[in-house]
Length: 366
Image (tube, rainbow, N blue to C red; front, side, top):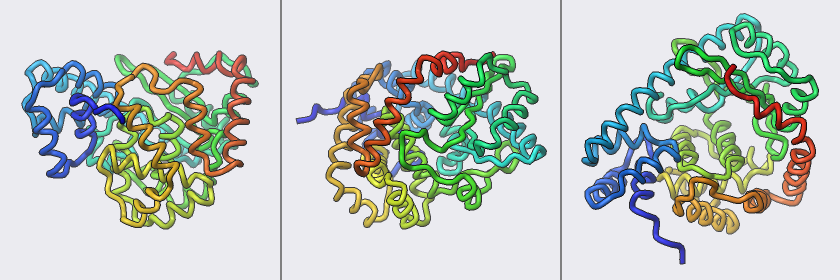
């Protein structure tokens, strides 16, 4: 029998939703009216990256100690200032990309603000952009021209990092703020079978406003798929992954397209797992046929229970060991092809680690 989650974990889990149902709000109020280790609540809130939501919902539905309220308010102010700075950076980059004729898509970060209601409820610490691999050299030149740092690395290291991981990081510092841009040349790394075409997703993108600048973001359907695979890549190590998917699920208009695309990309079990965890952890609402299909996937149900037990255990240092991560990724694959691909990726990453990783470790602000 799985151990009962602590009241501190449940407090954080219940708060991990932009808008609480009456039932969820009542449960949160009941929990917080009893004895709690508020230091542990804050520790878990920081780790699971939901302090803004915790602050908003505790303010409305609970009466935490004054020291807790003060800490949450202080963090909220710092977070808001950082988000405003990063939003202005995104707008500045977008304007220059438009002038230089570089197509791009915004990933995560500001593209989730509409689902959460505002930027303050879902802060971010960097800007993620997806560009064509063929445009990377122009992207690098443009970002360097905007004051982002030039890396001391060889052409082989850069090419290797892009080939294996499909992303590259640029950064700059402005006073107390740091601006990091993760430039993706693939939506997900080569270990996963889901590899959508950039131009196809750009054609069905949705415009969003970031600091007054219109930028293209993934459609809600494509964003749900991307977040599902990204959560798997991150080993479902934080509650906010479920919160993001629950928020985006409310905006999805064509679930048939999501499931069909997932089946063609051989990530249907990945999506089933995302649906189950978004529903069970964050109270995500899904059409009954979508939820029923996910619950018929026995392996996805088993993996969902495993993730929930792991999260509830509260081991924030390393929820899964290296071997457990490998087994988890293999179990989520739709079939043998996906397992072979992930195994090959793991071997490639290890083989290239000696000359790729030293560069990756220098991915810090200049």
